[in-house]
Length: 119
Length: 119
DNA sequence: ACTCAATATCGACACTGATCGATCCACCTC
DNA sequence: GAGGTGGATCGATCAGTGTCGATATTGAGT
Image (cartoon, rainbow over all chains, first blue to last red; front, side):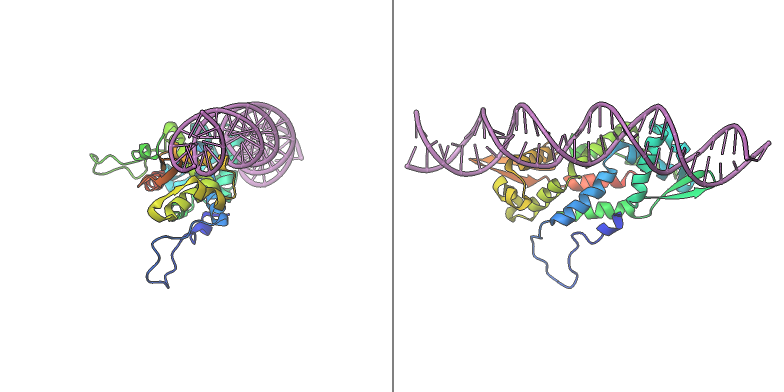
């Protein structure tokens, strides 16, 4: 599941001019999807990976740039990067020996938007 | 830790007029704090609790209102509510036999804001 | 006081997930 | 093609946590 699938969560129907004051509560499927998306970023290592990639020149970084500052083993970093890619937050671009990671534009924004739509 | 403590995470220094293009990456302590806050809401049961409280009349709800729609046992619901209160997302107001829960205004907003400050 | 109802706490169990060492794979260079 | 390097995958381990039944606690009503 990617974060873009969360766009529709909790959005009001534009065809209705006056929505009721009390919205319906999040249904089970929506809560499950949003929880899965939040679990992806609810990890200090993955938050730092996102931050490191965003802070890097050209907004892309290879694994070798990310392993040392996180003080984690290379397989662990690779594991976290895989989870972030599968969630649609990062993209992997393998050029030759190196793998470069980039932020997916709007991914975290849509996640924050989905979060604020809960209430 | 409450969500309000996250307000300062990643905010730019207003005394500096021209910030560098690349911000510094999230430090270990900041990543840990944000991850802990996100873990609180990265659970389908707790997301539905937040949504149910927000959707309820008067924006408050007692445990008996919340146990049945979640299809979880009463101790489990009480456990989740405790976690949400300790994180500063809900408040508990015990009046007589019943305990009423309310959303803390701005709690989720500040969390979403802290998330968007990561990158 | 006794009873009952609403909620919180406790102890235990099962499952998920973060981490690492070892290994495998792809590509580059000689 | 042989060796080396960057990165991914695998298997195991261990900590964390969601869940429940049982029990304790607190307040209302008789």
